Image (tube, rainbow, N blue to C red):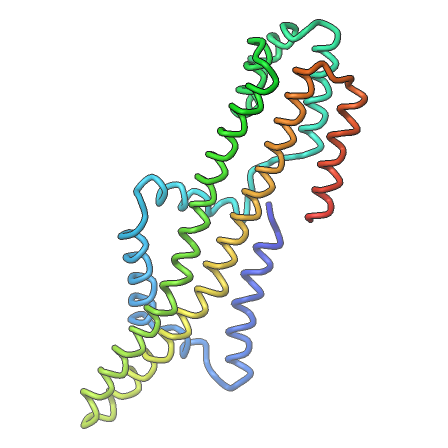
Length: 252
């Protein structure tokens, strides 16, 4: 579990409600049903209009990446590639055929199958790079959904503010109705800007970070598989792949 995401979201809400309390405001003053309906409903409606169905479904599923990111370990990948290299060195590429049924990662399994089939190193690299780029673009589209929500919500918040002010102006003769309209106007703006900057943009950037990490892993796998196909010595391969490990630590 990514505890930083949990702490970050909790801290964001504590900062907003805590700051409001210090200023003398109440918890109820930031809770407004009509404002929430306008901002959240309007933002979701805009995203529904612009986003293809399959991308929308996957973007909802990708929310769990924020708290439970997919396990992609550079260390495990290096150990796996080195074990394949040693086996191929000892038994030939056909010796890797027994490993195929045990491999669960679809990307690695595809590359392993190409190795066993005797594909040329250039062919392995070409096929896997196309696969990698397709996966990367497909997953980056998920981050764009939340980027879009971050773009829409402040504008929808302004719409909520205008609607609240219209309500105020239409009830100037009845002072008892002014408070609700003014509250909706200001709270809708807070909801729109707050959701964009405290929820939607962080989610988009977190997903983007996970995609970059996964792509880096795939690049390492391609490099390792091509090296195995070329018959590179396992020791040399280990030194090469350790470079990805240093890069990973530098990115964290």
